[in-house]
Structures are given as C-alpha cells and as structure tokens.
Amino acid sequence: MSAIWERTPLPAEHAVTMIAGLILHARTRPRLPAALAPVGWVGLAAGLGLNVWAVRARGEGDIDAPDRLVTAGPYALTRNPMYVGWSLLHLGAGLAARSPWLLAGWPVAAALVHRAVLREERQLAALFGDEHAGYARRVPRY
Image (cartoon, rainbow, N blue to C red; front, side, top):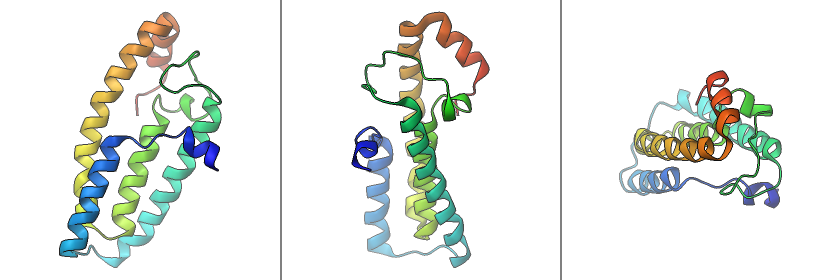
C-alpha cells in the first residue's frame, strides 16, 4: 500500500482546507444530521477506490514529469481521476464526520485545484500536442 500512497500525492489545496476544517470543527463542534454519515463513508470509499485505480492505471513514473499520456482505466472517464478522487474523499470526510466546516472547505479547494488542473493541462498539451488535444476532446475534465 505504501507504494500506491507514494504515487498518490495529496493536493495541498485539499490538505490545507481539510486541516483548517478539522481545527474549526474541533473548536466549535457543529454537527450535521447523523443520516449524512453513511453517505460520507460511501464517498470516502469511492474516492479511495478511484485514487487506487488511477495510480495503478498510471503505473510507474514521475507524476510531475510524465513520459506518456495515460488514457486507459479511469483516465478514459475523466482526465483528472486523482483530483476527482480527492474531492470525493474531502466531501466524504465532511459528511462522515458530520462537519459543516470540512464541507465548507471543499469549494475553496475545488476552485484552487481547478486552477492547478488548467496549468497542468497546458503543460500536457505542450508535451503531447495532438495526442492530448484528441484526448481532451473525447474525455471530460472532471
């Protein structure tokens, strides 16, 4: 499992907003309805599963310096399965913990991640040219 974790970077955008949400939650202890917790566990499981699938589909190599464009597995469904996975984990954690503070951090994280995704897509387009352009036409960003 550690090999998968090492190849699955936690986006700082999610880490910072989740930590802030946990701190605020611990200080104020607001609670969402208990009925939302099971939905959160499903979100956590889905996010974890999507990240594991994405890491396996991507295979070995430096995520920051890709030598090929990965288009199989979850990358055939979304161009950014790891970011989608982290969003599911973030939302799932908020619901499972019944924390409005964790949930409140998600839109901030999502907006910041979106900026990073746009930057990464420009880099991939420069590296892979027409191959990336065709992929971007076929597969949605999220």
